[in-house]
Image (tube, rainbow, N blue to C red; front, top):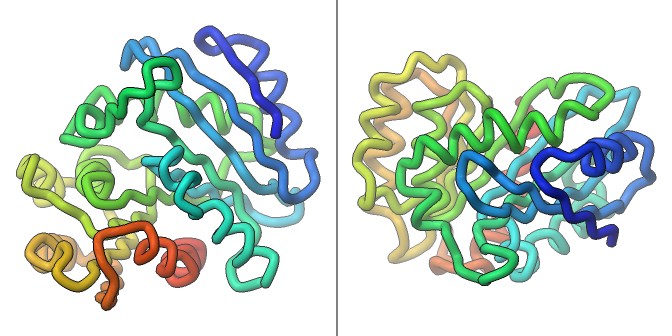
Amino acid sequence: MMRIFSTGFSIFIVLTLQYLSYLPKDIQTQFHINSTILSEKISVTTYGVIQDVEPISIVYITDGEKMIANGTLNKIKQLTSQGKIPDTFYVFVSTIDPETKEDKRNTYFFCNDDYIRFFEEELIPTIESTLSRKPKNRSLVGLSFGGLNGAYFSGKTALFQNYALLSPITYPCQEALSSIAFSENKDLNIFISTGKNDAENYVVPLTQLYKSKDYHIENLKTEGAHDFENWNSQLEQVLNFMLDH
């Protein structure tokens, strides 16, 4: 694993990321972005390969550090090596301060317009400015309160065409639902899941709202719990849904 530490958007990061499109498979890279918008240092891990002969799809994953620690990246590697999901490029975005270890997920995920600006103005330009061509689409994966964040993004920004909201818990910010209702975004693809005794109360109204926008919706209900075992078990279905669009 290559570890890179930067101050702002230094040329050090840019030159390093330029190598991503030339690296072989199974390359994992970690670096930090000093966000001026959030006034925080954000840890980012990328994994995958950019194929020059194929259109680029990029999957951004929030709660990235915890998802990696709980087996999500290993599951993606396994599914990819088995040919069960397409090769693609993943960006795991951490919510944990790399110095203090404080988890800022509630601050970032509760309908935070600055978090959208971070994606729009800092994260995505840093990642994608060095790629050989623009992606054909972007996907965003969020779980629990990260699903709330994904719902808010789907109403407030046109950055992403595909969303996976795994066990979305929306009660902390009803503005997410109103942002969807009044959004001008078209043709979104939304995957929404819940386990048993999990997020059922939030999934039904969220699904109905998305259907009222004529978005392409896929629902999944599992026997699993509100945990990483359940979410990781959905990855094959989730990623094939998003990468097919």
